[in-house]
Amino acid sequence: MKFVYLSVSARARAALLICACSIAPMTAWAGAGLLSTNVETLSAAVTYSTLATASPARPALDAFVGYTVRVSNDGGNTINNISFTASARVTDLDEKAVFSSAEGATCTADADGTSINCAIGRLKAGEAFPTFAVFFKAPVKDSTSPLPDGIAGSCPTTDCLSFSGITYYAETTGGATSPVDNSIAEWAAADVTLGTSNPTLVKSAVPKGGGSLFTGSGGVTSAADPFATSVIVPASATFTTAEILESPDAVNCTNNFSACFRSDITIPGTFSPYLTIVLRQDASTILKGTKIESVLIQYIGADGAVFVGDCASATTPRSDGIPCIAKRTYYKSSKIPGWTPELDGDFEWTLINLGNGSYKVF
Image (tube, rainbow, N blue to C red):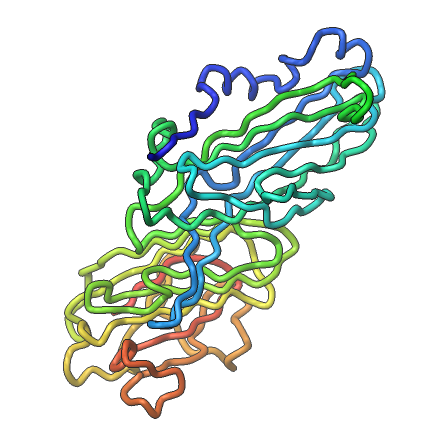
């Protein structure tokens, strides 16, 4: 039997977001100050994570749900012993989002990994704790009795992640032998929908440690999914979000392929040393006699569209935000490094760039 988790009602959630402290007892305001907690989602929709497989060999996709947290003392008194607590719940109870990391605060998870406690400490009147971020690994989709992918506004019956909790202050959580004598500020973040509409759309939060994202089945092409994109995001000074969206593009698709595609990559920020983007075109769409050197890659960035040229070296990106081609690979035989039966005859381009943008191959 499938049990469905019912999240906080929209009306209650809206009230909590307006003033997270509004449901705390009035006496707590006078005794310990006025505390507010604001939690924002980094991405309203996140792709499911996947497991690695051995045959065929596929890497795991680790997608993340991220939140920013701001706790502030909006009253006139110092508040002591502040503790931010939170729990992540998935509508499909056969799935679980597990705590991965915190950036800017010290947080510990419970044994189940779905609830956290972050120590805030003391805040003087008018003081705010520096905004921090917490990340949970998106669940792997239930394969036994799955719910439909998440739909905004329909989270009680589709697959979503809810995130809510209590910020304790004054006397923290009391003690095992003493009654709880706390002030509390309950809060709830907006739901995050899980799953994307097709394997050519990937969305995730990205921690400061970076990550690797790909479309399709492990970034490998097939006749049914003839174009694939992989992106390696390096470690950075801050967290961000990532989206890869692939779509057919028939414009100028005449000489090299029977079907052409574009990949729109949205990852805010500037990266050091660089983003690594790998584009693959399946052999089933490559017209006979086409040479990989004749294929054009067009980059669409903030300043318009340009054709992508070769890098000065495989590890030297351009400094102007325009990508360059670090490597071209034609998997013409098993003698080519990295060749697999599924890649046989495919074209592959490795590009490097300091920022994101859109790529069209034709």
